[in-house]
Length: 149
Image (tube, rainbow, N blue to C red; front, side):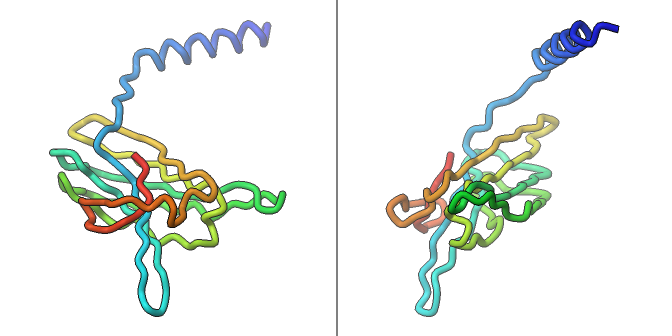
């Protein structure tokens, strides 16, 4: 069998299948990294914000950090967080985040259902973007943080 022809057929079939799949656009969802200063320490916490007028169901967030530090490849653990329900116009904490990983690319891959439709989106915080200079007001949380929409 001609492997080149076979590979080309697979690519064609794959493109045809993707064309038939509805990939809905994610809107009204954000990831925020909130800074909290306490007398004894500073804490950073990652939040999922649902700014839509509808609930999210079966929410899954996978987080990981990766990149180069002083020329050496580094990667954090991959963490998975599941939430059965997130109400409309609300937020939920996902996880604390350590300043030790701010120099890495920090990725949050979100999947959820609205009715029978599956949505997903990757939110990527580039290295050194989690810093005081990038803090903005987050009205839904009544806090300041780094916002990724």
